[in-house]
Image 1 (cartoon, one colour):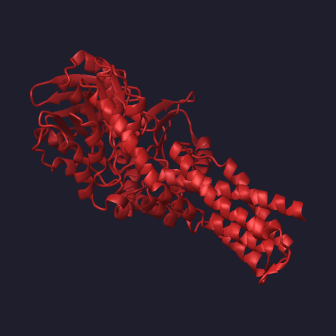
Image 2: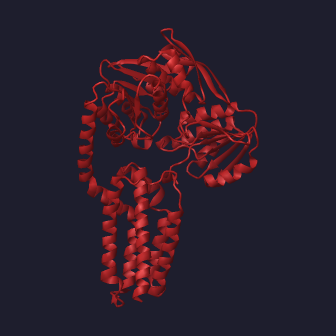
Image 3: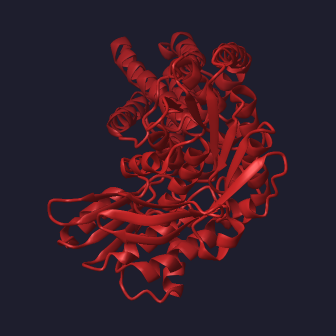
Length: 534
C-alpha cells in the first residue's frame, strides 16, 4: 500500500507544480500586474472547466461514495491526463524563464510543496480515520484545493517578493542611468502610441541606419524594465542613436521611462481606444501618450500623427511640434503629409510633401495606410536629423515587413497571404481590410477572432469591424467565442453577400480554408488572441 501511495502522491505533486507553471505563465502574459491578472482570472480561468473538474474530484473524494483507494486512483488518473495535456499544449507566446519567473516559481513551489509534503507525511500514510476521513483522503483533498486555488498561491508569492523586486529594480535602474549619463553624444528618440509604435521603431531604425549607428529596444521591450534591460545589455558606446519604444498600461508608465532615458525627440503614432480596461477613458490614453511630448527638453522635437482626433486636438506648447497625416482633409493642419498612395501586389508608392515645399516620392514593399503613416513619421524624424532625400529613399526601399504587422507573402500556389495577426486595433483592422479590398483577382478571405482590451467599447467596435468585413471580402471566418456575437451582428448589418463561417479555433479555421484556396485568392489573418484570452 505504501508504494501505491508514493506513486499516487508523486503523480499528483507533478500535476500541482505544472499548475503553478501555467499560472505563472498567465501572470507573465499579464505583465506581472496583480489587478490585470485578477481580471484575467475572473474572465477566463477561475471558473474554467479545467478547474471545475478538480472541484468535482474533491467532492468525489470527500463524499465517500467510493473506497478511498479508488477515489485517490481516479484523482491520479485525472492528474496523468492533465499532465500530458499541459505538456502537449502549444502557446503562441511561451513562458520566458527570466530570473523573476524563477523567483516566483521558487516561492510558489516552496509554499505548495511544503503544504503538500506536510500533508503526505502527517496524514498521507496513515490508514486510521482522522475524524470522518482516512488520512490519504484528506491528503488528496488538500492537493486538490491547492490546484483549484493555485492562482492564489502565485499571487501570494508575488506579494511576498515585492520588496525584493523593488530592490532589484532600483539596482538595475542605477546601472542603466550610469550607462546613459556616460554616453554624452547619444541622441534618444522615444516612440509611443496606441498602435504603430513597434513598426515605426523598426522603420526609423532602417532609415537612420543609412547615416547613423542605431540601437533600438528589441521586440516589445517597451516597459521600464524592458528599457533598462536594453540599456544594460544592448546599448553600445559607439551608438549614435537610441530609439526607445515606450508602452503603457496605466498613467505614469511613459513618464517613468522618460525620467530614465531623457528623450530629445518624441513620436506619438496614435491615440486610440486601446487598453481601455486599464485606462478606462480615451482621455487617460491621450494624457499618458503625451507624457512623452511633455517630457521633451525645450530644444527638442515632438512628432505627432494627427490622423487621430485625440492626438490632433492635444496642444503642444513646451516644444517644437511637427504634425503628419495620411488624410487629405487634414493636409492644411499638417506639416508633413502623404498623398497619391497606390497599392499593388509588389507594395506601395506614395509622395511625401511638407508645408515648407519638401517633396519626395517613395516606394516600399509594405502595404496599408497604417504602414504609410508609420513610414511618414519616421521620415519626419530622419529629415530633422539631417538625412538627405537619397538616404531616406534608400532606407525606405530597404525596409523589411515586420512580422505579423500587415506583412505580405505569396505561396507557390499563387495565394497571397496578408498577415496582420499582431495586436489588432480599430484603425489598423479597417486599414487592413481596405488593403484586402484592393485584391480583386480571386476570393478575398478574412480569418479573425476580433479585437480585445477595448473596455466598455469592445462590443461596439467589434460590431463596426464586422460591418467593414461585410464590405471588404467574399468569405469571413470568425474564430472563437470572445467577439463572435458582435462581429456577426456587424456583418449582418453590412448586408454581407459572401459566405460566413464560425469556428472554435485557428486550427479549425485552417482546415476549413485550405481546401477552398485557389490561385489568385487573398487571405487576411487579422489578429490572433493571446493565450490568456482563450
